[in-house]
Length: 421
Image (cartoon, rainbow, N blue to C red; front, side):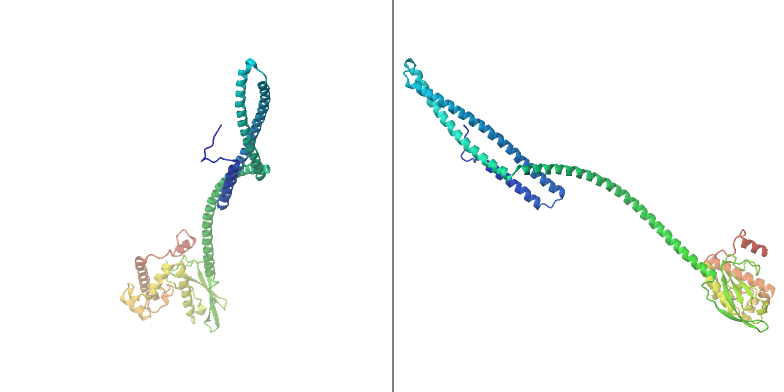
């Protein structure tokens, strides 16, 4: 027979049920207090499901113990009946005159008493076992009431769902990884596209700026932006009228003047129109002066304001198209005539005529020089040469001006060089 020490406490079904319930409560409380994601929640639910499976296994084990206990009780009852039968037979034998068998009867009586004591102990153990069996049945019934079979079925169903969700989650992870890879590739493409878009935007902005500049240039050279300004003119006979200046967006090749006197690369020229249906084409010289053939009908009473207006317009266009040439012309306006390398006699004549700056002398058209009193052909040549020397000296100090005459293989250059051989 097994014994239980006094300091030890027997582990009953109630203790096991209370421990399982406490463990379930702690897991549920931990699940409520946890701020984890869906995976953490599913882990807690899986732990609860495992606990319920454990309880179900304990129930099955308890059922097996009850069945075994019942078999033991049945055997003990059968043993009790057999003992009772043998006991009656022994009593009968003891009451007879055994004679020579009296010693054997005494031994049997002694053995019978021992058997009675053992049967009594067995009965006591049977009673204790039956009490324990009743207690187990009550605990088992209470447990089945607290944890019905439907809950176990539901937990098993949830476990299957959980496994299915795990498989779905794995598939989703793989899909997310594939989508992430695709997203990274698309982001790289977007970066390249954004870079291309920026480059295209810069190109478009450059084209817009060029378009605006071309529009402004076209408007400027076509005369759209020019303000129409009328000038009073009088013909030699005394007939009055008016004139105005019109711009053209292309240059002209002319055979007037000396070699290298006009700007052949200029992409503009002017026209003086009159109310008498007479017009004069005007081209710019390399000193910003207007060069044209003045009609003889207006020579006697010519309005010099027209020449001044033409010079201002030429300088405005040269400032944009020929900035270095514009600087040289501006410098000649403040340079004294004494800077020209010529004979003192020629300088005295020029100063007497009112020419005080290099620009005054340089801007005289060669076709007009013979008409100036006090100048002869030798002086004319000297003036032209000294002006060229001054311009060459300025170019060495400040940089060569833009191309003014064009190449010989151009149509304009061929016309110029052919006319000035």
